[in-house]
Image (cartoon, rainbow, N blue to C red; front, side, top):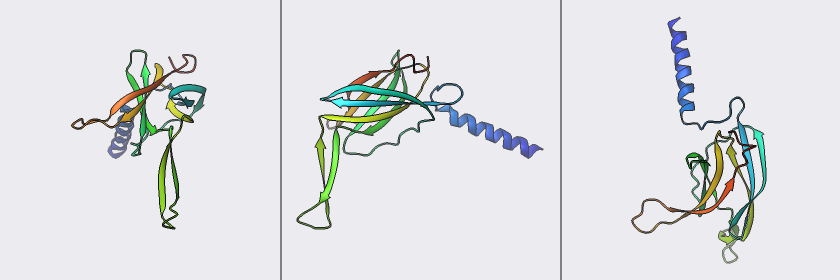
Length: 161
């Protein structure tokens, strides 16, 4: 009898610890917001927005040539959720080196226009998504500088209030 209680208490404790770091999502089934965006000559444009059932996993740190960070913010500016993604304005192409057959060479190409989709959780109180480009910091600085690329307002009808 005692072992069943300990097992039940351990299970409940693990469940509560797992929830401790999660954002306040809608009650019941969680929702995912898909933002279909276009980067056109340095400006972000929202093309489409869909809400579907499911959950969004927190993105792992992206170790890439160039990255973007995005924050889901409340009206007061509080960060409710954040993520990292590859810079959609940069394409990496690989091709075989003509001078050394069998060896690949890589090249980054800057794009003026790019379409991409971002997944965010449908969070209570979410007001906007802010996108930042990470820029290498000057000598002596610990972190890269974040440069604001653009802000996408979230429709109050779709996001939880």
